Length: 253
Image (cartoon, rainbow, N blue to C red):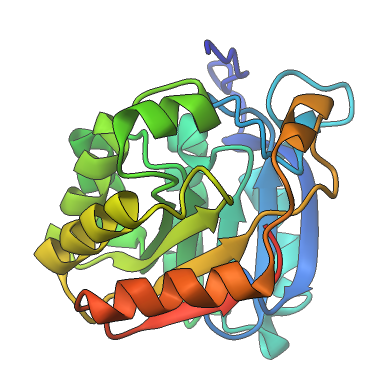
């Protein structure tokens, strides 16, 4: 999917196409975080519960880095960090770099950690540019089987797997996320291969399991049943039995 996103014009202040912000979040990285949701995504996941963020939107607003810093500064005393999510945050790499660089050099904000929630499609050179101002990345590896990944997202997973390896090598990979979809990502062969992939990075790497829910998804996403807590726990046990030591469960997709 081609996603056309606005970029700063010559002489225009750096910024990002922002769909919304959340001043207080405990689910978008460690601690209490200011979370910024960007417009635009290059995946077309049938499970997406924010489909309005995939393409263009009249609701999204070009927001300068200075404006975002002022919003963050108003809550800084109560924050652990800032997370940029989406959509796909790294599609707006230049603005993301400008934001994180500004946070790291601002005396009032430099204590905040900077995280991205990503689908993993940024290339290695992009991650290397971002790494000096990035404290952590949470990456969705939606399926380790390429065909299954294509069913879910519309694209293969080679870039995602490569990003996970690059982020790990850079010391920036903090969490891998697996969406548990009954009959699609919970098969034993898929899970054994998934566990082997994570072990090849670090068997202690946190893996978060997300139960598939219908809330917010488009009609085509309702062909798959919602995932039961029993299935999620079974997946967790399978991954643990194949060498992963930090498997976490969540009740939402």
